[in-house]
Length: 175
Image (cartoon, rainbow, N blue to C red):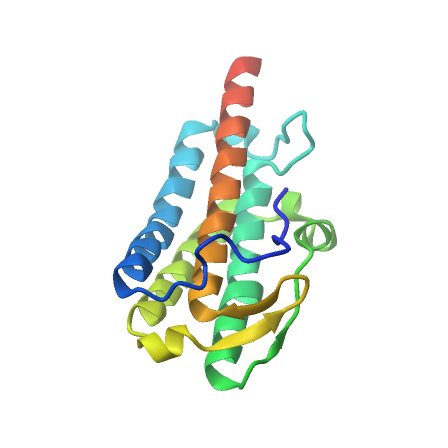
């Protein structure tokens, strides 16, 4: 299960336009990559957790949706509107338990995640270098800029992609 890194990812505060564009392209690809796991894992297994106890496919989709909306989008809006806001960390495991992700519709969660991610990538894509340098104080991580937030999003995506690949492979072995 993913955790917020205590420090921003290496290179996260770089504000180079080409690097930022590459990071946005990676973020934009995530909904399609998630959809690939929906295609690869039989629907009957979408709510099956791996032996590790990490998230099922349904829980991943719900988590990604909620973190995108309540974490990344909310943080971006505050960083652009306020001067160095205090940004709360989010406990993804607590959200999963409180919202009973296994009872939610994973297709709707996947689609909502894709819509919010597309909107965020579009909004991020038109930011100036000065806007990408705006920042806030992320609980547990310290100062972070918009560019750093994008790097955290990419890192978070990578964690979920690795967990999803392991889940897919384990479920395939179970046969």
